[in-house]
Length: 54
Image 1 (cartoon, rainbow, N blue to C red):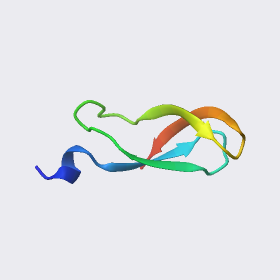
Image 2 (cartoon, helix red, strand yellow):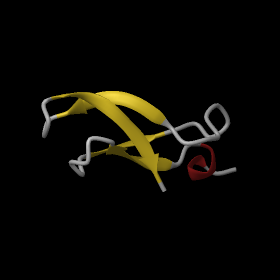
Image 3 (cartoon, rainbow, N blue to C red):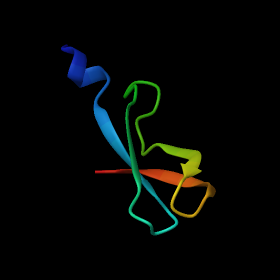
Image 4 (cartoon, one colour):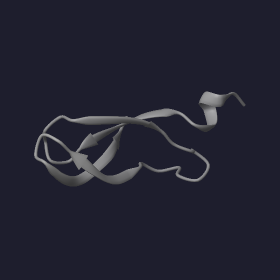
């Protein structure tokens, strides 16, 4: 297995509808479904949920 198979690069898009994204890597073995994190969205100036985009 190569590096990209286990830890792919994913985009996290804001659920606030601003279009703001974060780019990160995730471990596919530990998190097989879509990743959801609460992070800061500077457009709305508060913490919102960011979901993995495919």
